[in-house]
Image (cartoon, rainbow, N blue to C red; front, side, top):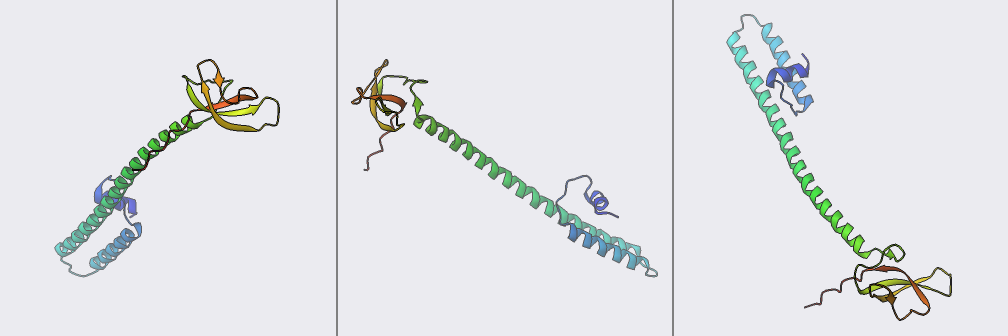
Length: 168
């Protein structure tokens, strides 16, 4: 008799989690005991039936324990995975917000949404050396104004970072 047949016989079609080696070992012991009892002359069948029923009940209990243990571990893991997934989603959202707030925007593609002071990356109008430097500039809704208006072009801008909270 195969383990699958024994599993079906013990608990029907339930999905089981068990240590196959231990179950196989128990089955082998039962088969040996049955063989031993069958070969004994004048065996009292009620004693054999009781012994087999007890061993069968023990195996059912062990399989049920293994199944419950596996189910509990699976539920616990699912719960933990759910919590971690929620935390990852929150952190990814926060990261996206930070990236959006701190990304440099090319002036030729996007201008500030409202008047105000912004961080800007400047390029020297008279040199094409690719060197940019960063300073503050003011957007009035139509044009930029800064202390470098005469010799620098504003190429990129970004929102200014928030000031840190003061220590108490």
